[in-house]
Length: 257
Ligand SMILES: [Mg+2]
Image (cartoon, rainbow, N blue to C red):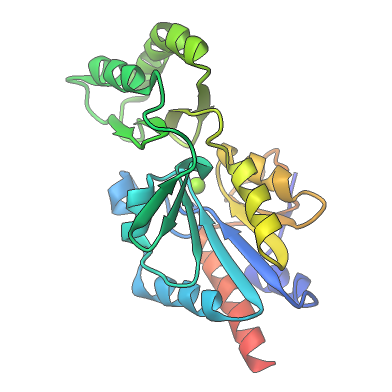
């Protein structure tokens, strides 16, 4: 369980650190989870806040998200920050995307085709092909229908998943099948080795637990969630609004010193 804190408390807890390295998930951390992924867009204040933090000598910013790297390049046109997409499988630099795993990933197009076939004619589902992962979003689907589709997908995809060594991850109303090396934990470990500063890692989802584990003992994990749950993170902030407040407080404090 994580200790619940406010933006003010968490900012003061970190005030003694001379350099901070913020590692931020996108959906549910920088922006509220939206009914569909394309509705979760950042406002200009958030973009300028990230840019200010990215420009500072004593803070480093990385966004590590499960989103397709093309989405992140479009959503976060922020110079001076690192952007890692598709759960660590791709790095975004401006409009350029570097894949860190070989594409196409064997088996994923079969999974996408199966998910499309199972959800054809059903409302509230979205199948997203993200290069090294396929996501089945069901936020807007009827719960009973979502349960049926997930059960059928698990039954029909098991052989391909096993034969191709793919990984299955359940997120917040999304099921993802991904390349086994598409891992937020590995991405965060690599970032922490590359950049200086005390790592402060923010995530809201079960996929972020591997990122919390990567900074465990050598950084601070912050779960962003309204309710407590079992987590590797040491602290909990209630919402993306609190994350933003925290980042603003850190910026103001550092600018006044
Ligand atoms: Mg998230």
